[in-house]
Image 1 (cartoon, helix red, strand yellow):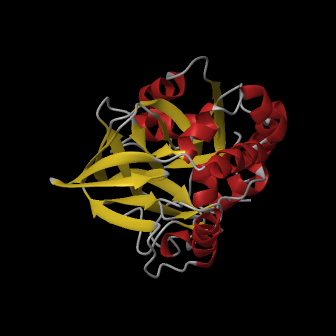
Image 2 (cartoon, rainbow, N blue to C red):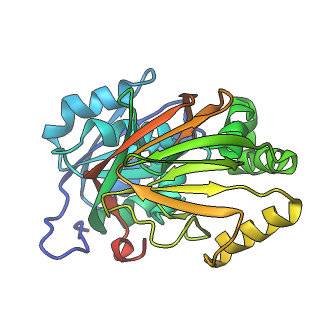
Length: 309
């Protein structure tokens, strides 16, 4: 069976480098499934294992020129390492689910079954995607945030994540939401400063998450050359319920507990030093300083997904 790609004018993939994080939650079974899927599609696949943080990116940078595509099998950390290492001139990157949250794979509507994911991406389209870049050079694809989202990641143990998967984040997030911790944030967007209380400040690149289940705001796109600042500040439990309902049903009518800003250069400082997450990984503490790199990443996506974000 020959590999086919959905986009017009795109040559079929002939070769792939599969970079695997051996500590990923799904383990050897996923590796075998991926290898069989590539073989069925007549795509020559070499498999390389990363050995430490940063190694997946180093492998991708060193070997990208030898392949038509690079696939990352692991969590979101592995995926963004590979994406960052191949920006901007490398081959397209395919993301295979192998971690706990698989936030980026879910945001791109990539199947959670590895075999199906390989088939979907090999026969899919390519998309150019903006990336965010932090002051220390760390890149992110989904977003970077402070508040409930970062606190739940900081308090979720590796053992609990491996056993419970994305449910671990849901449970931890619910516990923090019930506490409703708030902070004062000073947000600067393209030189304009605002100051407000918040429970979450998220600098978002993707607006649609979890296979379309959640939409963070109106008009947030991964290819528009800007980042969107989403500020959520539920004061009462009823506020939290209302915000959740709005995000689920894409209702972005005016709400005192939700506000949005948009720009290319963004900084977020807080009155207390708070943990920061980027694409589901802890990356340090506030302040956040982020800029956008327009259309920096080249990703493999399901056919027609480029029109649904």
